[in-house]
Length: 346
Image (cartoon, rainbow, N blue to C red; front, side):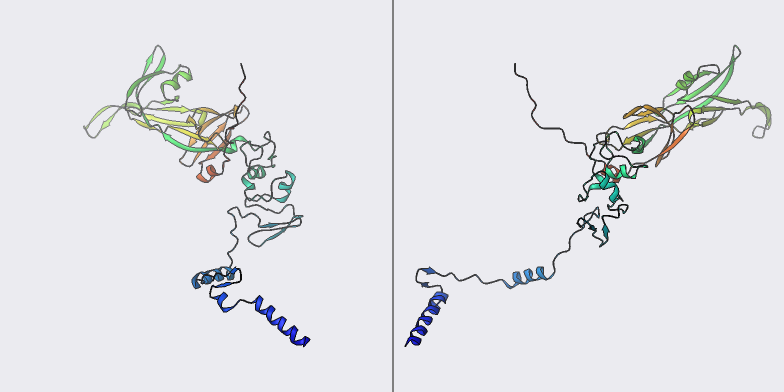
């Protein structure tokens, strides 16, 4: 009898735990309401299963920086594993080493660490690392030479024609006459004396001074007229000695002088829109260091040759044309503060 009682009690318990057919159809069992689940869309279920079966790959950043780091190792997206103790191993896309990053406590886990500028001097970390010797990326007074950030932005031709028309003698002094046509087509007559100061000659001859005159004139036979006649094939050199340029003029024959204006840009924050415009042959200085003077010696479409003015020797340097990639890497200057300023009370 005891066994039958326990069996009946167990059956009642099971009946209480499991829903009846009425419950399954959405009826009411006691005080509990049962809601039938919405049917599953087979297409959605298949899509979810595919996502679990094929998890997406981790997208490596453009800088190819490390994926995983620990106290002892760094794992790169290309599966290279580098030990932290290998301090001279390149660790960033630009090639900065662990030693350099650790020395200056740069943020190793920042994928853009190459192009950060913690001291705000305009030279990002990679440039300071690549300098020889490397400079301190956290000291604004320590950075690569400013000239390393100078680039050629463009060259604008300034065409003008010059014609040596005649030579005469005035009270024992040679006098030369020219017709100069500027880029607007305006013609002006220029008279230059041999003993005139160089600066005065340059002002009249677009930066040139008188050079050697070679007289070649007389009488000779002319086949066209079948007779002798006077001729004058004399030539005169015009010089720009500062840039080793010489233009030879034949009398009464116009010559196009290859002159131009050069535009430079400094790849530094806040200086990108401040072009340095200078005519070929003229002197200029970088706004960031006006104490050092340079002269534009020559230009092409892709580079400019400048000369550092030094009393001891001529130091020529080639300035390459800027690329858009170089411009894009220049750190942006910090945005002006929007914090309210204190206004004194009257």
